[in-house]
Image (cartoon, rainbow, N blue to C red; front, side):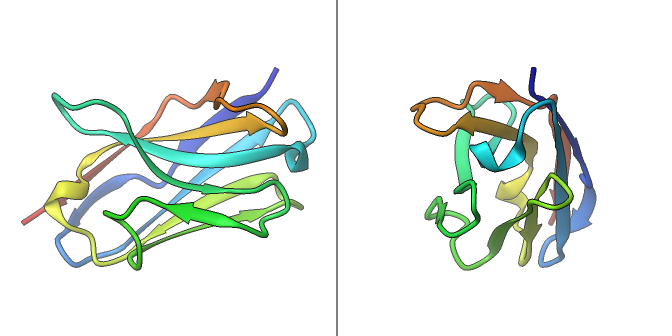
Length: 119
């Protein structure tokens, strides 16, 4: 059973930075692509970024491209999201998710961490 625990959220002023981390356990980490998603109040959950199991490929939502960077450390079983130039519209609960190789859906999710960007 995969378990995901996010950390690193908080309150930051617009233009600032935060680094989110997600600790993965329960299965071989390299078998899973990892993703970050977010959900703002009153809105549906949306895709932010994803990274392949070996870290060789990444994809970003247009809204965060050039500001956010997803990375992973397969030795430490962690995936990170470096968020720079934060905007108030980045305010949301951020979720870490895992997708088993060959599957189309992210089947495992963390509980989320709150990110609040003040103007």
